[in-house]
Image 1 (cartoon, one colour):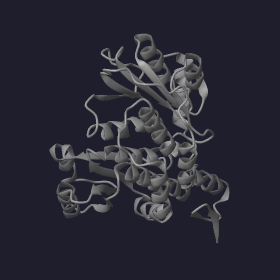
Image 2 (cartoon, helix red, strand yellow; image 1 turned 120 degrees about the horizontal axis):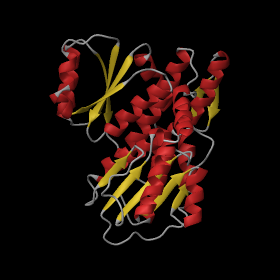
Image 3 (cartoon, helix red, strand yellow; image 1 turned 90 degrees about the horizontal axis):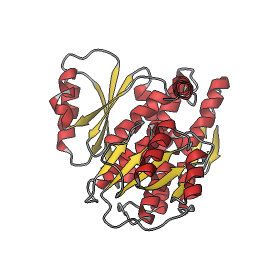
Image 4 (cartoon, one colour; image 1 turned 90 degrees about the vertical axis):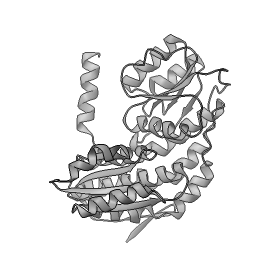
Length: 342
């Protein structure tokens, strides 16, 4: 029996209480086309022109919000002639200040590390923009007339990935920084054509009871990282990433005498012969390897396979009898930071 949800179909399964929670959370991944449509209709507030002679771009964010910076960095390496720097910490590099554009990305608008950095770059005289669903960061942006995009609320950061990414690209474009990404309408149509639910079930089948290892080229590292993080947070399982060709100088040796319940997933661009060599090497070492070919635009593939990983990780959580949405240790860490006033 199926429940129709826009262009997708969600399996009705008798999961019990935790299963119902998993099913509800699964919807937050299955509705990405609708989420992107909502973001498409949002215009940046207080948009203005970027200073002439900007020296660099700083992207600040943590976790499900911070992954946006990784994608922007990868996109920028082929499009921009100024550096893009990521900060996933309490501290901003000393050389960032006046002449820089700093973008704070925080789904809640309350992330303490990002708030700390945001206040610091304002103090240093950088040009600042904000992407959030609300919280102190939106309040600060409104008070100081900073450019900002307010994304749809009442979700988790990880299930809001396309909204955060496209909102950040939109605010950069409003400031004159165009990274040449496809229009939201194109991404929506692409997602509607792809059977990500089926792919998610297939990936979950491969990775249930395993420690996932997500491998990619340097360009697609943000996708491998996003997939790893989905399994960490939703499936409550250790997972790792390996990036090649760097991995041919270290990681690859670790598989010569490997042990443990590992299962490898390779995200591979068509024509990437080094990753084909990697696959053959791992298969000859006796590993389980699944390869997924990437042939569409960068942003389309990153969003599509992030959705697939999210779906798969929720299904694995359900199979393990876990609540995919709950993240106890993250909550404990946030309380620790609040209590100790780091």
